[in-house]
Length: 87
Image (cartoon, rainbow, N blue to C red; front, side, top):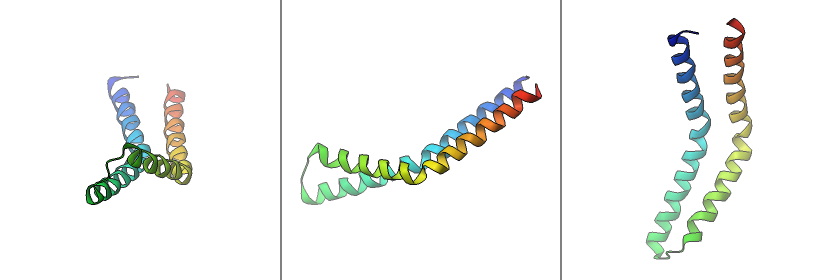
């Protein structure tokens, strides 16, 4: 394995991580923003009010997007194993 192949594998690993994690992070960020706007308008500053809805949203998004995330990670692993097989 030369340096170019190692860097290509590392770049692919980073892109796979970003591709798998971005939907969950975006959903958590949007839910947090909505709750923060509601807290600012109602002047209710309760810590659990932001934590619980984000956890529920992330849980539901993991249920809905779990297959996509698993397929993305499996495609990367298959690519990595094919690269190992070529060596």
